[in-house]
View 1 (spheres, rainbow, N blue to C red):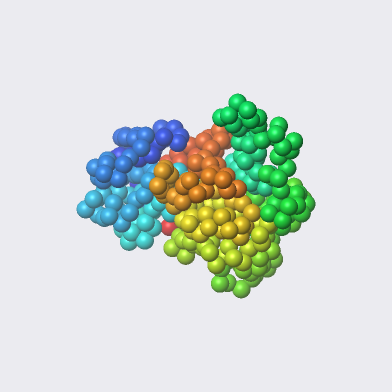
View 2 (view 1 turned 45 degrees about the vertical axis):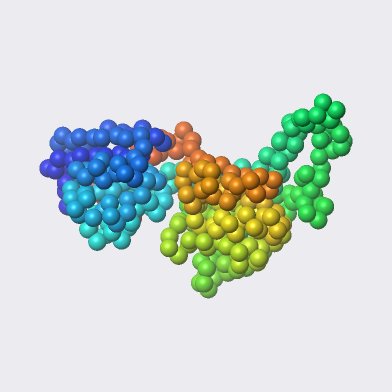
Length: 338
């Protein structure tokens, strides 16, 4: 159905990440752009919107109730993940939800490989130990006093770190991002296994979920967050993993049980972990055990959900978001997830 004759009010509730483009759509339209929107501001800002653009700010069933947003006709997520929208509530009202698939694949996959090297080579730990100067003027740096910082880089068994050619990668989530990480990993000489969904018999070249946990020395998470994947990796899963394993999460917060991850690192059940995503975002003091004092000395690398950020990603998001809105207004929807 064409929407050419409608007068649209476009509301972007989270524009701090990118530029909101101008749209070439039939007829006049209005646009309101907000850098960030607090939950208390949300309904008031979008109550007259026909099109809402978001990225991570949640559109819950309450927000999507017809009394709260009576004019809403389209939701566009300027990202790949769709977990910020209550899809069932949108579907019940017949509101299409679209995303920007593949826009950040190159950036996120390269960031994931960077997190692997930072964790396997303990780059943050080594940097901090190299530059740390004791308060006492009678002492020197740890490196100067001990002659080497090799113990900092050694594994718990005293041996040196694995090389890429020694690694067995497990990929959980085999969409565009998983495939890109597979290609990069193989290019580095790593063996790669693709995990089947938990509880599903392996198909094709995939291996069972539990076997991926057991065999991997590097486990990359690249899957969407959904009710089925919340705490997918928790205590029981860590106990199946190799003590030499690294966990790299560039998927979504909530897929990994953060308290269980902290305990696995403390007990050396696994060697290290890195994450770009958190159950609560933005993440601050008290929001995650991974930011607690207990995590400070662990082989844990944290980045603030910026794996997606690159100049090309911004161009892709802006172009895809623009094309998605324009196509829907002409009755030819694209990138529709439901």
